[in-house]
Image 1: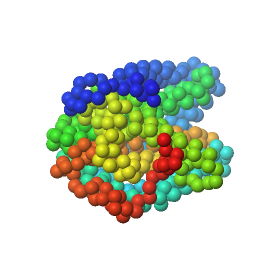
Image 2: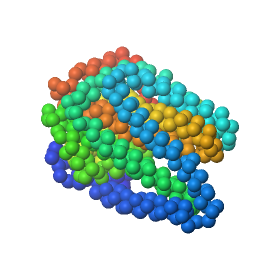
Image 3: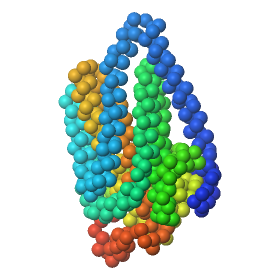
Image 4: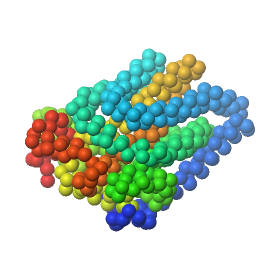
Amino acid sequence: MYLLILCDQPSIATLNSRRYTNRISLFLFVVHMVLAFGLVCFLIFKGIQGLVVASDTVKRKEMRILKYFLPQVEVASLLSITLALAWQKAVRVWPGFMIHFILWSSFFMSLSAGILLICFQKAPTDGVGVCLIAFAIGNGLYACWVTQRIEFSTKILIKSLEPVPKFGDLNQPTYWMLGVGFLWMSMWILAVIGALNFYFPPLTIIALVLSMAWITEVMRNVVNLTVSRVISLYYLRGMQASTEFCFQRAVTRNLGSACLGSVFVPSIEALRIIARGLNLLEGEDEFMFSCAHCCLGVMNSIFTYGNGWAFVQIAAYGKGFVQASQDTWEQFKRQDMERIVDCDITSSICFLTGVCSASICVIVVAAWTAKVHQPFTATLSLLSLFIGYLLTRIAMALPHACVSCYYVCYSENPDNRLFDNTIKEQQNLIKSGRDVVVRTPRVPHRFAT
């Protein structure tokens, strides 16, 4: 938390802020990109060197990898981009239907991918398959648990997507990021192949995977910031902002916040979900569950210093990541919207869309690889899972940003004529006790400090 505060900057409540946010994070990301690019180029050189001047054994090994490894990864990347754009378009056109469809298709696809991998009857594929089946079971339980939240989330999604047709080029940043992501992914996979001819291949590949995860998450948040600025200016000032200008701002002045948020938001959200899961359990061990409640309290406290809602105020006002997180959550508290935003499932839907694309890529790549060169099946299944998820999340940043803007801008000015009574009606249901939504686990009063 101390690091977060050091990386932050003071809040500046102006729509025309020219300050660079979270400069330390921006500096670290630029240094990382230089090192990552240098490492990728060096590993590609090592791969070429292995094909040209290495022994016949090494040459045969690399030729086998290029023949049975590279095509599947490239196809997985192209398939992921196609699915990503298809998911986004479908969500924008049929939002009500797609929420139900994504919840259950992600369950069936991940279950199917897991069963397929187990059918190969190899220890590595069995391990990946069991993990996918376990996730599918959790996915199915979650789909049943959030059933009562779907109606309200659907209303918000439909309403928040209404401004999108007013901006014909709003999807341009998504196309750019997916194109850059595909090119970088192609270089990245060549570097992974080259890492096999370098020292400590497992550690090198882990470093490449972590680097790719951060880069693609930053790409997603660049799209998030661009869309957030366009839509928030529409809500707050009724302005028809230039998407190109907002994109330039996202990749320059606000890039530091995108870099910082890309590290902390997924981490905080994952730990918060784990803490909430523990608090759903009941047991006789008072000490264990008091610890679980304590962990949840800590995670909820940290959440106020780093959450995904902050990107709206970062884009609109040029605030630092931590300050924007605090200000946004304070706005939700003032408008008594904490429980409402906590019950929204849009972020979960975007996550499950990535899972669904990843599972489809696994099914296609695993079936193909098992036919041509079965020893690579488990490795390529993991890579296609990774690629499918990351690229799909970039495209789903647009609907996610629209929903975030609707909540945050409403909390700033509930009387704006662009908002309807959906949130007010939900608040009245909660206050009257007629809201039947299953509550998200929170810290019981006896454990709260």
